Each structure stands twice: as C-alpha cells, then as structure tokens.
Length: 52
Image (cartoon, rainbow, N blue to C red; front, top):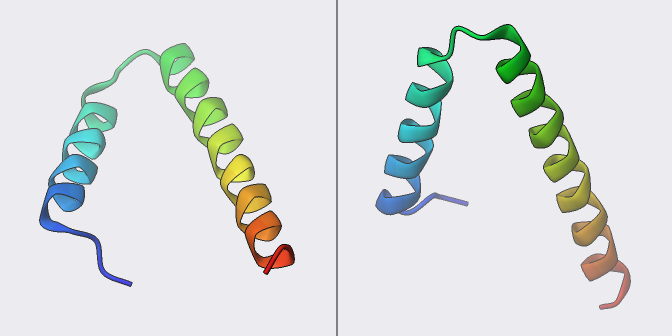
C-alpha cells in the first residue's frame, strides 16, 4: 500500500515538528497520544476484518 503524495508531505511535516521539539514532557505527551491512536487503529482494523 502506497501513501499519496499529500500523505507523504503530511508525514514529513509531522516528523519535522517532532524533530524540533525540545520539551521532554511535550514529547512524552505526544508519544502517549500516538500510542492511543495506534491501538485504536488496531482495534478498528480487527473489527472491520471480523465483520466481513
């Protein structure tokens, strides 16, 4: 599966924002948020597969 050009640009923008962060607490908060989103995505994917 290939990301669109717009998605690739968005990904690069997010990576640059992360790279520019210097506040450890802010990075920890972001990491927790991304972990939550990743888990929600896995749950949603499992639900879609199970309902087919």
